[in-house]
Amino acid sequence: MERLLASTPTDFEAEVIVGRLADEDIAAEIRGGLMTRGGYVQGGRDVFVAEEDLERARAVLSAAQGIGEDELAELSEEAGREQPD
Figure 1 (cartoon, rainbow, N blue to C red):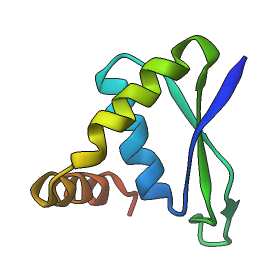
Figure 2 (figure 1 turned 45 degrees about the vertical axis):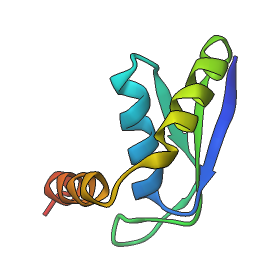
Figure 3 (figure 1 turned 180 degrees about the vertical axis):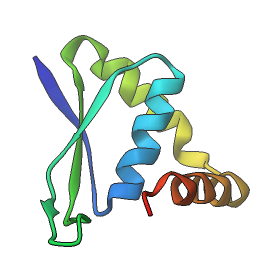
């Protein structure tokens, strides 16, 4: 069974969380939001993990609270490169 780990206002923030979890070998899934005609996701996004990974995932997020501006800028650049044309 999957459990809600976090809710974010943007797709980018949800992707950052999923990336952090993947670095720790924790599988996560993003759900929610509405697809617009242009193919963009609008609205809040929810990040789910397996119930058995929930506590470890919470610990990863807790440790990630201190993300620096340089790392955030790097993640933003990476996300921009991954966007389809």
